[in-house]
Image (cartoon, rainbow, N blue to C red; front, top):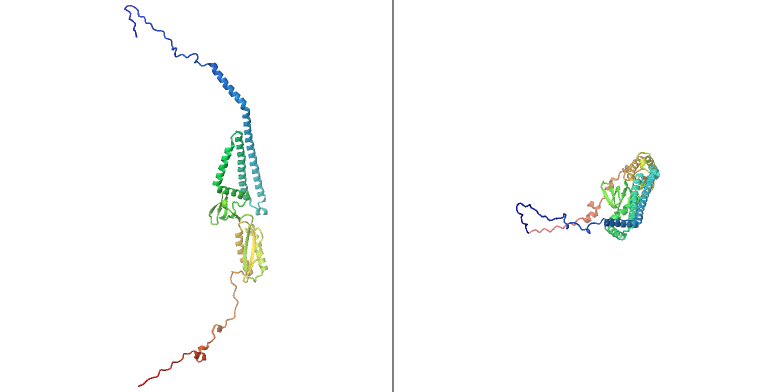
Length: 379
């Protein structure tokens, strides 16, 4: 670096500063590197043109696909609504038919209206659920098919899963199907007294998988529907009260028939037996004839579940009526004994024996032989 010579005194100072341009030329962009507004506009124009072309080429397919999916959804919703309303009207008609016969003689032999209503509501709920599942499931598959989604793997997976669930939960499926058929066939309902084989009692709740029973001692039984092989319904329709009476063979059968008829007519006019008796008390005939007794069978048709109460009342009234009529019942109070002639006092005395007389030949024959006296020797 060379320092310029200082000027001498008395001369002005002149500094030469090189001219520098700002900003430096190296920092200025080149003409070639500057963005071209024309190119940007061209690229945007090409992009818009391509998008417009793509939309123009595919809008018809998209519109067709959208309308197809919309049509499927609308038809499925309309069909589901129509089916559910039809089922609801059918259930309502069944309930009105049950209410029309309630309180009549025919209605007494049929299931009561409340039970029919519960059964119809359960059936309607199951049918509505099944219809909704089928319609909506079919519509979903049709929508997926419209979207060009391969349904083969989906259906295969669903089939394998269904088979696995069926094998793993076969007892559950059996219980469910048994419950559905029990409800559809109206085998029993809430309030019925049934004998299900594994348990018996009054039905508290009927489900698609489990039936709840209350036993005679108050216990609750949970019985799976798939385990019920037979059912004896003791409350459906009507019941029969049967009473067997053992009387003496010498009693008049006509008189017995008249007494039983009077008892039945009296019960049919009294409360609450006038509602519990659904038929006349009648004598069916002789059930058994023996040397010491004969059994008369009495029967009556009763309200379901009231046969045991009617049987107890019949036994009570028959016992009182037979006692008043003088008809002897086997097992009742013993009749008064008839007077008999006094027995011979000598009949219990044994005949005299010949051995009791010592002078008789028999006594002498059995007497011991006397021993001879030994000789006495004297000196």
